[in-house]
Image (cartoon, rainbow, N blue to C red; front, side, top):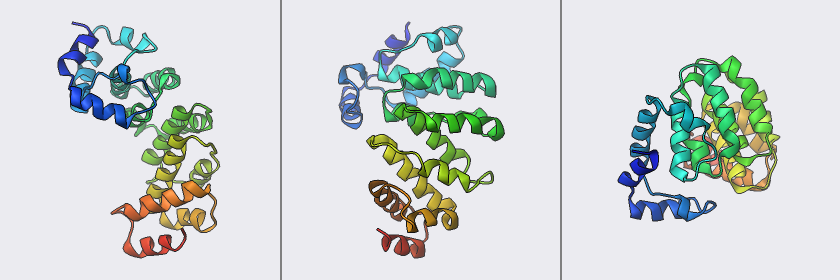
Length: 223
Protein backbone atom coordinates (compact mmCIF):
# COMPACT_ATOMS: atom_id res chain seq x y z
CA UNK A 1 0.00 0.00 0.00
CA UNK A 2 1.38 3.40 -1.00
CA UNK A 3 1.33 6.47 1.20
CA UNK A 4 -1.35 7.95 -1.04
CA UNK A 5 -3.48 4.83 -0.55
CA UNK A 6 -3.18 5.29 3.22
CA UNK A 7 -4.27 8.90 2.90
CA UNK A 8 -7.27 7.95 0.76
CA UNK A 9 -8.32 5.42 3.41
CA UNK A 10 -8.45 8.25 5.98
CA UNK A 11 -9.92 11.01 3.84
CA UNK A 12 -12.87 13.06 5.07
CA UNK A 13 -14.55 15.12 2.35
CA UNK A 14 -16.06 17.63 4.78
CA UNK A 15 -12.67 18.11 6.42
CA UNK A 16 -11.17 18.65 2.97
CA UNK A 17 -13.60 21.52 2.39
CA UNK A 18 -12.64 22.99 5.76
CA UNK A 19 -8.92 22.74 4.97
CA UNK A 20 -9.42 24.31 1.55
CA UNK A 21 -10.94 27.37 3.25
CA UNK A 22 -8.22 27.41 5.90
CA UNK A 23 -5.37 27.22 3.38
CA UNK A 24 -6.60 29.23 0.37
CA UNK A 25 -3.13 29.78 -1.10
CA UNK A 26 -2.68 26.19 -2.33
CA UNK A 27 -4.78 24.42 -5.01
CA UNK A 28 -7.74 22.63 -3.39
CA UNK A 29 -7.16 19.57 -5.56
CA UNK A 30 -3.86 18.98 -3.71
CA UNK A 31 -5.75 18.51 -0.42
CA UNK A 32 -6.94 14.98 0.36
CA UNK A 33 -8.72 15.81 3.62
CA UNK A 34 -6.99 13.86 6.40
CA UNK A 35 -7.06 14.93 10.04
CA UNK A 36 -3.89 15.57 12.03
CA UNK A 37 -4.06 12.54 14.39
CA UNK A 38 -4.29 10.20 11.42
CA UNK A 39 -1.40 11.97 9.68
CA UNK A 40 0.77 11.70 12.78
CA UNK A 41 0.04 7.98 12.95
CA UNK A 42 0.97 7.55 9.30
CA UNK A 43 4.13 9.64 9.86
CA UNK A 44 5.21 7.31 12.64
CA UNK A 45 4.70 4.35 10.30
CA UNK A 46 6.79 6.06 7.63
CA UNK A 47 9.50 6.93 10.15
CA UNK A 48 9.81 3.29 11.18
CA UNK A 49 9.63 1.95 7.61
CA UNK A 50 12.40 0.94 5.24
CA UNK A 51 11.23 3.52 2.67
CA UNK A 52 11.60 6.55 4.99
CA UNK A 53 14.70 7.93 3.27
CA UNK A 54 13.16 7.42 -0.15
CA UNK A 55 10.06 9.35 0.90
CA UNK A 56 12.08 12.21 2.39
CA UNK A 57 14.16 12.57 -0.75
CA UNK A 58 11.20 12.42 -3.13
CA UNK A 59 10.61 16.16 -3.42
CA UNK A 60 8.49 18.04 -4.22
CA UNK A 61 5.46 16.16 -2.99
CA UNK A 62 2.15 16.45 -4.78
CA UNK A 63 -0.28 16.57 -1.86
CA UNK A 64 -0.66 18.90 1.11
CA UNK A 65 -0.85 15.97 3.51
CA UNK A 66 2.37 14.51 2.13
CA UNK A 67 4.13 17.73 3.09
CA UNK A 68 2.68 17.63 6.58
CA UNK A 69 3.67 14.00 7.03
CA UNK A 70 7.13 14.81 5.71
CA UNK A 71 7.68 17.40 8.46
CA UNK A 72 6.17 15.11 11.11
CA UNK A 73 8.68 12.43 10.07
CA UNK A 74 11.59 14.87 10.16
CA UNK A 75 10.57 16.02 13.64
CA UNK A 76 10.98 12.45 14.89
CA UNK A 77 14.66 12.25 13.91
CA UNK A 78 16.62 12.09 17.18
CA UNK A 79 20.08 13.04 15.98
CA UNK A 80 20.32 16.85 15.78
CA UNK A 81 22.60 17.03 12.76
CA UNK A 82 20.51 14.56 10.77
CA UNK A 83 17.32 16.35 11.77
CA UNK A 84 18.47 19.87 10.95
CA UNK A 85 19.87 18.71 7.60
CA UNK A 86 16.49 17.17 6.78
CA UNK A 87 14.76 20.39 7.83
CA UNK A 88 17.03 22.47 5.60
CA UNK A 89 16.39 20.17 2.65
CA UNK A 90 12.63 20.50 3.07
CA UNK A 91 12.12 24.18 3.94
CA UNK A 92 12.31 25.47 0.34
CA UNK A 93 9.36 23.23 -0.58
CA UNK A 94 6.99 24.50 2.11
CA UNK A 95 4.16 26.38 0.41
CA UNK A 96 1.66 27.16 3.16
CA UNK A 97 1.51 28.14 6.82
CA UNK A 98 0.15 24.89 8.36
CA UNK A 99 3.13 22.90 7.07
CA UNK A 100 5.48 25.57 8.41
CA UNK A 101 3.76 25.59 11.81
CA UNK A 102 3.01 21.96 12.63
CA UNK A 103 6.37 20.29 13.23
CA UNK A 104 8.56 20.94 16.28
CA UNK A 105 11.66 18.70 16.16
CA UNK A 106 12.39 17.20 19.57
CA UNK A 107 16.13 17.22 18.95
CA UNK A 108 16.12 21.03 18.88
CA UNK A 109 15.35 21.41 22.57
CA UNK A 110 18.66 19.98 23.78
CA UNK A 111 20.80 21.65 21.12
CA UNK A 112 20.07 25.38 21.42
CA UNK A 113 23.68 26.45 20.90
CA UNK A 114 23.96 24.49 17.66
CA UNK A 115 20.46 25.48 16.52
CA UNK A 116 20.75 29.26 16.86
CA UNK A 117 22.89 29.91 13.74
CA UNK A 118 20.36 27.98 11.67
CA UNK A 119 17.48 30.00 13.11
CA UNK A 120 19.23 33.26 12.26
CA UNK A 121 19.78 32.03 8.71
CA UNK A 122 16.18 30.91 8.34
CA UNK A 123 14.80 34.22 9.59
CA UNK A 124 16.95 36.11 7.07
CA UNK A 125 15.56 34.02 4.19
CA UNK A 126 13.44 35.66 1.50
CA UNK A 127 11.29 32.53 1.36
CA UNK A 128 8.28 33.42 3.48
CA UNK A 129 7.74 30.02 5.08
CA UNK A 130 11.42 29.46 5.84
CA UNK A 131 11.46 32.81 7.66
CA UNK A 132 8.18 32.00 9.40
CA UNK A 133 9.55 28.65 10.58
CA UNK A 134 12.71 30.33 11.88
CA UNK A 135 10.71 32.88 13.88
CA UNK A 136 8.49 30.16 15.29
CA UNK A 137 11.50 28.12 16.41
CA UNK A 138 12.97 31.22 18.07
CA UNK A 139 9.64 31.79 19.81
CA UNK A 140 9.30 28.18 20.93
CA UNK A 141 12.87 27.61 22.06
CA UNK A 142 14.41 30.93 23.14
CA UNK A 143 11.88 32.89 25.18
CA UNK A 144 12.65 30.77 28.25
CA UNK A 145 15.92 30.19 30.06
CA UNK A 146 18.06 30.85 26.98
CA UNK A 147 16.47 34.22 26.23
CA UNK A 148 18.55 37.20 25.11
CA UNK A 149 17.18 40.65 24.29
CA UNK A 150 18.91 40.52 20.92
CA UNK A 151 16.36 37.92 19.81
CA UNK A 152 13.60 40.53 19.99
CA UNK A 153 15.65 42.80 17.75
CA UNK A 154 16.25 39.96 15.31
CA UNK A 155 12.52 39.55 14.74
CA UNK A 156 11.66 43.25 14.89
CA UNK A 157 14.10 43.91 12.06
CA UNK A 158 12.48 41.32 9.81
CA UNK A 159 10.47 43.18 7.17
CA UNK A 160 8.03 42.01 4.55
CA UNK A 161 4.50 42.60 3.36
CA UNK A 162 3.43 38.97 3.19
CA UNK A 163 0.45 38.33 5.50
CA UNK A 164 1.72 35.05 6.92
CA UNK A 165 5.11 36.55 7.73
CA UNK A 166 3.60 39.59 9.46
CA UNK A 167 1.23 37.38 11.42
CA UNK A 168 4.15 35.28 12.68
CA UNK A 169 6.05 38.39 13.82
CA UNK A 170 2.94 39.54 15.69
CA UNK A 171 2.54 36.09 17.25
CA UNK A 172 6.19 36.15 18.34
CA UNK A 173 5.81 39.50 20.10
CA UNK A 174 2.50 38.55 21.69
CA UNK A 175 4.22 35.48 23.13
CA UNK A 176 7.19 37.59 24.20
CA UNK A 177 4.80 39.94 26.00
CA UNK A 178 3.52 36.93 27.93
CA UNK A 179 6.94 35.48 28.74
CA UNK A 180 9.33 38.46 28.64
CA UNK A 181 7.09 41.45 29.23
CA UNK A 182 9.61 43.98 30.56
CA UNK A 183 11.95 43.54 27.62
CA UNK A 184 9.37 43.20 24.86
CA UNK A 185 6.94 45.96 25.89
CA UNK A 186 9.57 48.51 24.92
CA UNK A 187 9.06 47.52 21.28
CA UNK A 188 5.38 48.34 21.65
CA UNK A 189 5.95 51.58 23.57
CA UNK A 190 8.46 52.78 20.97
CA UNK A 191 6.34 51.53 18.06
CA UNK A 192 9.27 49.59 16.64
CA UNK A 193 7.05 47.25 14.64
CA UNK A 194 5.14 47.95 11.45
CA UNK A 195 1.75 49.45 12.26
CA UNK A 196 -0.26 46.36 11.29
CA UNK A 197 2.08 44.06 13.22
CA UNK A 198 2.03 46.43 16.20
CA UNK A 199 -1.75 46.33 16.45
CA UNK A 200 -1.99 42.59 15.82
CA UNK A 201 0.64 41.84 18.50
CA UNK A 202 -1.35 43.87 21.01
CA UNK A 203 -4.58 42.15 19.98
CA UNK A 204 -3.10 38.69 20.41
CA UNK A 205 -1.49 39.63 23.74
CA UNK A 206 -4.79 41.01 25.04
CA UNK A 207 -6.50 37.77 24.02
CA UNK A 208 -3.88 35.65 25.82
CA UNK A 209 -4.58 34.17 29.25
CA UNK A 210 -0.84 34.35 29.95
CA UNK A 211 -0.78 38.17 29.99
CA UNK A 212 -1.90 39.83 33.23
CA UNK A 213 -4.99 42.05 33.30
CA UNK A 214 -2.82 45.00 34.31
CA UNK A 215 -0.54 44.50 31.34
CA UNK A 216 -3.50 44.06 29.00
CA UNK A 217 -4.99 47.40 30.02
CA UNK A 218 -1.68 49.14 29.45
CA UNK A 219 -1.21 47.49 26.08
CA UNK A 220 -4.69 48.62 25.02
CA UNK A 221 -3.60 52.19 25.63
CA UNK A 222 -0.73 51.73 23.18
CA UNK A 223 -2.88 50.76 20.21
